[in-house]
Every structure is written in C-alpha cells, then in structure tokens.
Amino acid sequence: MSENLPTILLIDDEEHSLAAMRMALEDDFECLTATGADAAKALMEEHFVQVIFCDQRMPGKTGVDFLTEVRDRWPETVRIIITGYTETNDMIAAINEAGIYQFLTKPWHPDHLVMTAKNAGDLFRLNREHDQMSLEMRYLSRSVESKLEDHRRALREGLGFENVLRSPNSPLNAVVAQARQFASFDVPVLITGEPGTGKAALARAMHYSSLRSDKPFYEINCTSVDDDILEMELFGAKRGAVAGQQTQKLGLLRKADQGTVFLNGISELSPRMQLVLSRFAEEGAFRPLGSHEMIRSDVRLLVGSDRELRQDVAEGRFRSDLYFALAKATLSVPPLNARPEDLPILAQNLLFEASKAHGKPVHGLSDDAVQFLQGYSWPGNLRELENELVRMLIFSQDPLLGPELISRHILQASPLPDKTDQSVDMVLVGEGTLKDRVELIEMRILRETLTRLKWNKSRAANELGLSRVGLRAKIERYGIAEPDKTGAGGNEEE
Image (cartoon, rainbow, N blue to C red; front, top):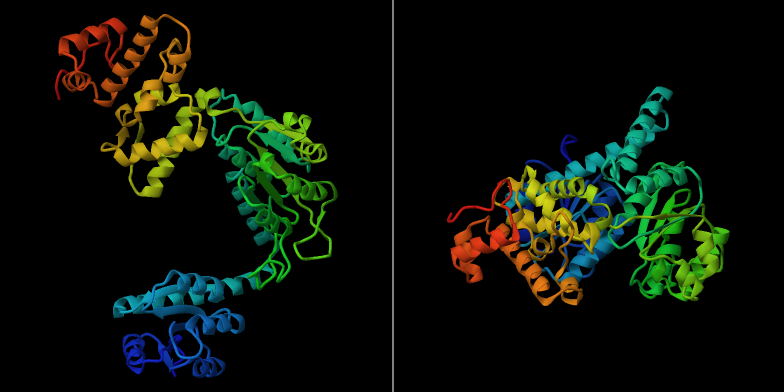
C-alpha cells in the first residue's frame, strides 16, 4: 500500500455496500474492508488505520459495540457510523458509548462520503499534530514561555472586569471596585442580586482577575436540581454508585482543584445539601457518592443568591454555619431598572451579539428605541432585555432598529420624562381620580399605537376607532410629540 495516502477501514456485512464505498474512496485513501467486527479487529492490529466507517446493524457485534472497543484500544482513530436507521436511542448510544465523530445515513451520496472521509482524515492529522505540539511545549525556551504567558494574560483580561459592561457613571461601578478588591484575596464571596442581573459574569471576572486565573472555572446553577444529581455533579461518584453508571465520575469540586467554582442559586439548596456543602466549605474535604474515602480539594467558592440570605438564616431556612463560611465577603448587584445609564451600552452589545449569532447584520438601535427601552422597568433584567432584542432583530427590515419594533407592553409602560407614568397594574390600584387614571392609560395607548405604526395617523385613527381630527385633538391634549419633531404633527398617510 502507498504510504502517501491515509488508511481507511470500511466495515459492512453487505458486500455491495463495501464495494460502493471503496469505489468512492479509493482515489484518496488506502481502503481496507471487513464484513464483521472480528475481521475488522484483525485488520486494525495489522495496519495503521486513521478513519473507520462502520455499519451500525451487523450480525454479532453492532457498530456501536465495535467502535467502543476501538475507542479503548485505538483512541486516536476517527470513528464514523453509517446506518439506515435513525432511532434516537441508537444515536445517543453511539455518541456516549463509542465517541463517534459523525453519523452518515443510507443511502449516502458519494460526494458526501468523500467529504466526510477527508474531514475525518484532517481531524486525525490535526489531533496528532496537537499531541506532538503538546509534547514539544515541555521543552520550549523561556522566551517562548514568556510569550505564552502574555497570551494567557490577554485572555484573562478579555474575561475579566472589562467584560462587565457598564457606563462611566453606572451604579455598578462601586460593586466592580469592591469585586476587584475581593478578587485578589482567596476568600469565598457571596453575590446577591435579582435573577438575570449578571452575577455569573461578575464571578467569572473575579476568577480571571485572581491568582487562580490559570486554573479551571466552573459554574453550576443549584436551582430546581434534584439533590442526588446536584451532589453527584459537585462531589462525583464511584463506579457503580449510581444505577447505570459504568465509570467513575469526577465532580466539579475535584475538576476545579486550585481553581474556582461558582454556585448560583445557593438560596434554593435543600437542608441536606446545605449540610453536605457546609462540610466542604469549612474543611475543604468531601466524600464522593459510594466512597468511604475523604478527598481534599483546593477550590475557591463563589456563590450567588437571588435574595438576601440573612433573613433566611434568621428564620432557620438557611444554615448559619454555611452562610458565614460562604459570606466572608459580600457583593450586591443592582437590578437593571436601577442602572438606566447602562441600558444603551448593554442593549447595543446584546443586539450585536444576536446579530452575529443569527447572521443578520444591523447597524444598531435608534435613539428613540433606546429611550423607550430605558423607560421600561425590566423585571427580568438582562435575560428579558436579551429576549426583546432578539425579537426586534427577527422582525427588523432596516439596519437601524426603531421603536416600532419594540413589544407593545414595553412601549405602553415607557414613562414620561417626569416619571409620572406607571404600568397598567400600578395605575389600576394606584391613587387619583377616575378621570386622571383613565387619561393616563389613554395617553399610554395613544403613544404606543403611534410609535408602533411609525406615526401614520390615518392607520392609528382607524385602529383606535377615532377620526383623524379626534386623534389630532387627543395628541395635542396630551402633548405627545413625534420623535425628532418640534410639534405634534406627523404623517397623515404612508
């Protein structure tokens, strides 16, 4: 066989399928063929095989069974399943048990087969080169090591506090200043704040600004997670400790040795998990599920809570020993409605991220759109803001997104400059005469409808059941001004 071409092993119990695959691939690969797992194993022992294409349904061992053995003995070989069946169970088993690279379904197209084989060959080559480079890295000179450290430093800076977006006069600046101080001290930190305020980003920035920045950072949300699953994820489990588990599982506290773990939603821990975690927080040791051996791990704990825990401690819902072990230092992240100065930069950044993720280029948000967004209270904080911007991106027709794309409840809730406007619920249960409260709601509906319809007064009047004269009178009465206009007038028709 030529030494210039990579070797590929084709396995199928149907001779005509083997012949078809060989015909498609033999110009670019040295092809070995086998009709079953035993013959394929013998060929693997005799030849240096880079890629395997294996049929899933074969007499005796299935493709998954055979590729699982291949993974254990020849882990570098790229493994691919070809099957005429697409049951979900087969796909999950192949991914989890055999570590396959890709699925191909029958009938396959020759060009697709060749492209997959070439990609697999490239992957094999790149993995070998990576291993070789990793070996050579041990013997690099000090100058190269210095360059590598510079690269790591740049990476840390990109994941540090510079990534916590805020305006120059943001209320968050004081919190970030405190977090910078805490970052360099190896103590647990409790970060409190409403859901979606960016507690995880702050924790990540603290890790990458600490002396542990070269070590792992892991994040796990404790909210609505079963105790058994959470305990296994944190502390790991011995082989056989959990039904169906055939291998030992390393927990995050073991994986993150000398690094950082951020536990979000700490206030939702059950009493049992609070007890188990308190032992680790105080002693730095834990026992994996099914093990009698205590394991020590040097992990810095950062924890997040959606509410203040002092009240929970006072009322007995949260262990005081765990609280004081985790709250060596505390930070409180303000909600989005307390930092309107940050909304323009946050909204533009989230929009550009969504634009990149969905492949739809945009120039940004108009000033009027930003003004409406700033006026909303954002009870869902950054998550709600991100969802709204994705929605606006989906419906946008122009590169500059205007206020007409904003959801109606946000347009209606947007307050006036004097902050006298309120949400519907607040108006309904608030104080004031019936006339004043009805007019407040009427003004909001008018403003929302005109904005959504781009100030086409004919369409707005028709939708609201008003004459154009009646609409104009109400606009003048409430002083609703069209954006970028000095008066209340606008387009009568489009």
